[in-house]
Amino acid sequence: MRVIVTGLMAQHPLGGLTWHYAQYVAGLARLGHDVYYIEDTGMWPYALDGGTTGTDFIVDNGRANAKYMSEVMPRFGAADRWSYNCVIDNRWFGLSDADRGEVIRTAELLISVSAPVYHPDEYQHIPYRAFVDTDPVFTQIKLARGQDDFRQALAVYNRHFSFGEALSPRVPVTGHTWHPTRQPVVLSEWQPSQSTRDVFTTVMNWDSYNRVKYQEATFGQKDIEFLRFLDLPSRVAPQRLEVAARARRHVHLPDAVRSHLKFKGWQVVDPNEVCADVDSYREYIQSSKGEWAVAKNGYVVGQPGWFSDRSACYLASGRPVVVQDTGFSSVLPVGDGVLTFQTMGDAIDRICEVTARYGHHCRSARQVAEEYFDSDKVLVQLIDTATASAGDETTAATGRFEG
Image (cartoon, rainbow, N blue to C red; front, side):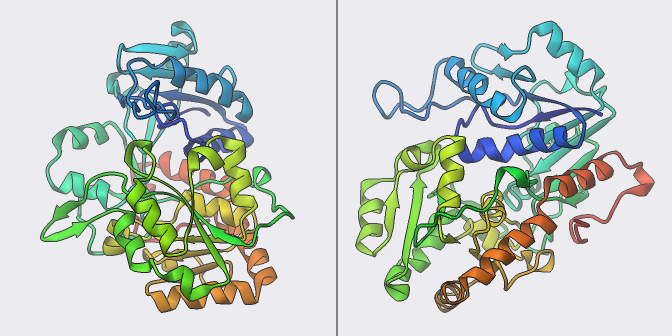
C-alpha cells in the first residue's frame, strides 16, 4: 500500500520523539509498503537550543526544523520521502509540491500519530484514515469537555486507535471506537548492548502541560507522581537512580527542582546534552541498567492501560523496566522484564528484584519486546484493523491486542 504517516517529528526535533514517529515509517517500509512521512499538523515549531538568548524556544520560521528533517530522515531510509508544512508561513519543505500532491492523491492509507492533519480536505479522498491517540485520558477528556474543533478534526478519520489499550470506566466515553494499539519497535535497531552503567535511568518531561479537571477529578503530569517517590534513592542505595528531565516546551528543569532532586539523592542530567539526537538517545537507553519511571498522574488516575514508547525501547534493548502501573497488566505480561509499582514499597521491592536476578530480567525484557512490540506484528494489526470493513471491526479498547 501507499501509506502516509504524519506526526510531530519536525515540531519537536528530539531524539526520543524522532524514534517514536520514525519507527512507524521504517517499520512499514520493512513490511514492503510505499511509505511517506508528511507532517501537516498546524503545530508551531520549537527550537531546542533556546535561540540566541538560550530561553527563546518559540521560533519565527521553520527552516531549522526542516533542516533537522533533511538530516534525520536518511537515517531511516526516507531521504526523499518526507515533507513538512510550517504553519507560521504555510511553507512546505522536503518533497516538491508536485511530488507531494501526487503522493497524497494516490495514497491508500493515512496514519496520523498524535495529531490530526491541519488541511483535512486534502486527505478526505484517501480510503483508509487512521488516527492514533498516544495520550489517552487527556484525549478523551478534550472530547468529553466539548472541544469541538478537536472533535471535528478527528471526524476526518474512519478508524481511531489508542495507546490506552484497556480504557477503564474512569476514562470518559467519547462516542468513538478506540482500537488498542501500541508503539511499534524496529527490533533490529535496538539490539542489546554489552556495555552497561550501574544506574537505572529514564527520560522525562517534568510537566508537559497544565493539569485538567473533569467531573471533580484532577488529571496531572509526571511531577505529581514523581514527588511521591522523592526519597527512593536513599531507600535503594547503593543502587543509583538518574533522570534526564526537562520542563514544558523543552525548557531546562528549574534550578529549584534540580537542586531538590539532587539533595534527595537523584542523579540529574540534561536530556539536551545526553540524549538529544537519535543515536545518543539510543545509546543512553542501551547503556542503562534499566528504567525506573513514573507515569503521568492522569494515566495513574485514569488507568487507561497506557505503556510508554520509551519503555518499549528499553525492553527491546534487553533492559528491564520498573514502571508505574497504568492498568496495562491486562494486556502485557508483568513480573519478568516488566515490573510495576504503585507504592514506595513496591518500587523498592521491584528494583531489588531486578538487581538480584538481573540476567533473567534482561532476557525477559527482550522477549517481551519481541512478542509484543515488534513493528512487524504491531503494524500488521494496525493496518488490518484500519482497512477492515465496518462489519469486521475488532473489539475496541477493552479488548486484547492480538500481537
